[in-house]
Image (cartoon, rainbow, N blue to C red; front, side, top):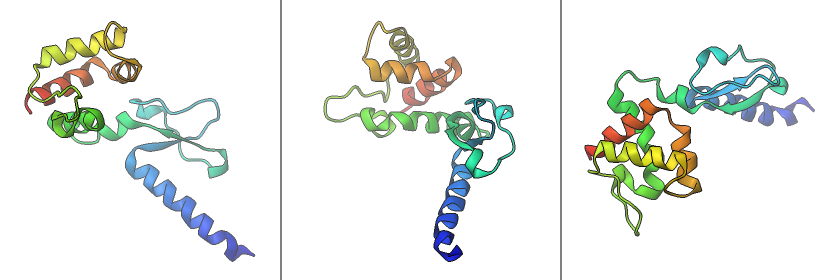
Length: 142
């Protein structure tokens, strides 16, 4: 009987390893989820049955020490619509070579809802000013 559950246990263990290595954290206290960008909000992992998987994208992004690597990782979120390294295809706006101040201003306007659509508004609101500046600097150099 126990052997039937072993593949499930291995799968769960594998997910925990993947989660730990990709920036997905375990929020160990119900009602107290991990806070993106705040590693102190993560507690010690509890039993899996009492845990909730919470993506902690910013913690995963800031593992490296160089801002150029961080900028590239942040900018990677843009590739599906704006193309690899900002070189867009199929009528989407390209970001490569656009001035950093223009990108920053556009992101602020999108966050405020004065330009863009709901998708870009959500993206713009999810970044800090420092992250927006990193993204803008990255695309301006492409």
